[in-house]
Amino acid sequence: MFIKPRTKKTRSAYTLIELMIGSTLGAIALALVLGATFYTGRTMASLTDSVNLAIQSRSMIDRMSQKIRQAEDVTAFQPHEITVVVGGTNLTYRYQSNTKRLLEIENSSTNTVLENCTQLRFELYRRNPITNSFDQFPADNTVSEAKLVRVSWTCETQGIGQSTGASELVSSKIVLRSK
Amino acid sequence: MLVATLVLVAVVSTVLVGVMAHVSQEHKMLARTATWNSALPVAEAALEEAMSHMWWVQLGNRAVNGWTVSGTNVARARYLTNSNSRYSVAISSAIPPIIYSTGAVWCASANKFVERRIQARTRGESYFMKGIQAKQKITMSGQISVDSFHSDDPLYSTNGLYTASKKKAGGDVGTNLSTPDAIDMGGQAKIYGKVATGPLGTVKVGGQNDIGSIAHVDGAATGIQAGWYTKDMNVSHPNVVVPTNGVWFNLLSSPVPQLIGGVSYKWVLTGGNYNLPTLSLSAGDKMLVTGTAILVVNLDMSVSGTIILNPGANLQIYLKSGSISLSGNGLRNDTGRAYNFGLWCLPAVSQVNISGDGHIVGTVYAPSAVVSLSGGGSGGIDFVGAIVGNSVNGSGSYTFHYDEALKDRGMRNLVVVNWKEI
Image 1 (cartoon, each protein chain N blue to C red):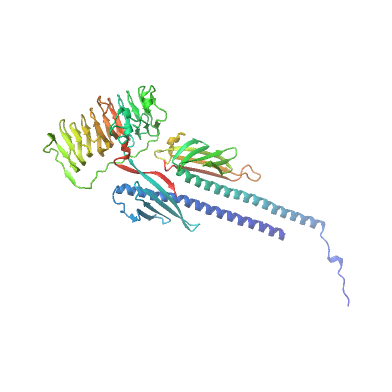
Image 2 (image 1 turned 90 degrees about the vertical axis):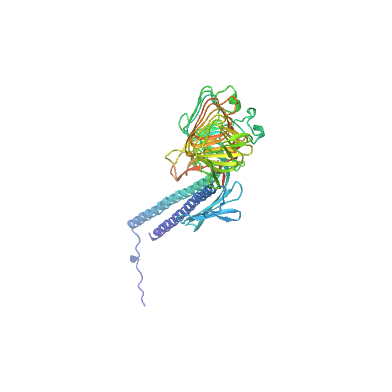
């Protein structure tokens, strides 16, 4: 029996050019994967921030409107702070621009109810409607004449490699039903 | 390449699933929030229906017009036209009543109704919450003064009567008018009480006018005391509706006088409901009221004689059209209480003139008429009670004393005074 040995001629290696082309294609593919991963990661982070901001802001405006609507009176007011009386108890909302937080102070208990808040403003309005509009006359900061409270804020997050990320703008007019 | 492609596809797929999950979550959250918020107007619609129902039936049976008895309450439930929302509302039997209202809106993402429930406490609020109220301009001149007392509180009255030493600074004057000089004060007019106008209104005061507390008005300071003027007056003055229930008697315009205790009376109202084409009492004529009476007059009321209310009597006059002239000693209210005499003017009444130096104890509700107070005597008491007019003009040396007991008496509107979510 005779077995023909395999020759080295059929097992030729990559040429240098083949290796360079292959390496280049691999690098391009890896770069694409990494780029896509980074980009989608950033998009995901932004989207997550956006959703979290929306949830935070909407749940807060729901909570705030529910409480202020039941208030019997406004006892103190500044554009960044308001105190109302709910069920005989003082309830204060105070915005701290340095920490970008909104605090809720009730029964000597202070809670942070909003974070990443870049601007917040309260306004007071009288009960009198302006003719041919849905607006009311401003109360000119006179708490005794306040019947409506308008609150507006903007919440923003810091994006990856960007100055700003997601943002959420909220504005609402709340009627004091018990006043 | 295959491995790279698989990795890429896996990454993109993971991201897509994540994005879709987030978007879905946000959608559900938004839908839930929108539904939760829209449930509140539905609950408030129920509250409005309950308030309208109580206004409609007044003190009558509330279990009518679709409302049914439910335990000690009367209740009603409705599906709104789009069938995606419904409400149920109950009015308690308490006095004043408490309203419980539930609004529900269908939330498709949660596959159920989202409900919100509110409780509203009410209070009967008098038509006379201030001494003088108007829809339009209020003018005061001469030496007219306005203050208050409380006929049910011995600290602020003597046997229910006004006493100058017990006066209060509750003689509030207000108008809905929202233009400059909505309240125009001249002469030496003074108000022991607060003033109110619409948001763009102003109060014109001269150098000898005072508005504020007793210490302010009686002191050296002049003008409006700080904190005694508000610019948010927004009061509804509904039209008068003539009562129709009960048995009615038609009086003659020129009846045979009745002699009681040696005194001749043109009319004697012993109690009940009366109709009269025109009420005219010339000087020397007298009308005697001995019980609780309602008198409906079709056209004009001119009194230079005297309407006399015996102790324990109550007279409410409804004038359908024309004008009122009350002069001299036009009214002698021996009950001493303003809520025992009322002049109620329907929209067709355009003028109410009250003059002379009489001691008028009563109320005037004329939201479509010009009400003029003039003259005034030296006794220091010219009008005790309250006035509502379209516009009000006061002059002479008229002294006006608002009886704060009227806040808790007489014809009333139910208003919500406390609202909370439960």
